[in-house]
Length: 106
Image 1: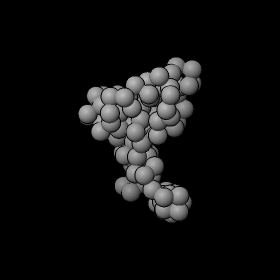
Image 2 (image 1 turned 180 degrees about the vertical axis):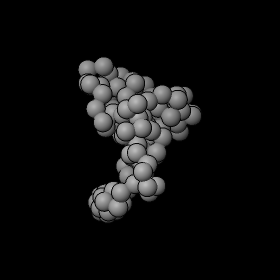
Image 3 (image 1 turned 60 degrees about the horizontal axis):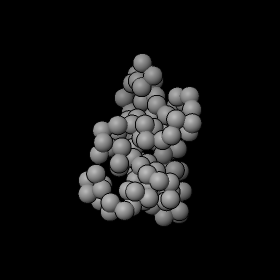
Image 4 (image 1 turned 90 degrees about the vertical axis):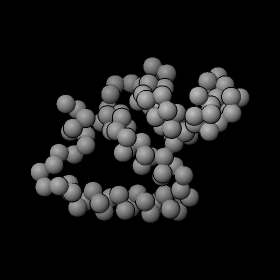
């Protein structure tokens, strides 16, 4: 698995033992390589009830956006968030298309 996600075996062990914190983008990358939701990699006590954010993170698009945003500088991250707010204010790209959240809750 370490090779699949571009890490050393030792780094994977540190994540597994809780010696090092894992970034959201790395967690998503590992989840994609295992073909599971990033939520499944969290301890049960940290999962909580399925919130709308939990449902959203299961989408490949959301995981990709999260990984990209996590790799940005803090200034670029703020710009990306502003841009996403502007896009969201425009509404759905396809008239009548339900938001991704509504699709995931079915």
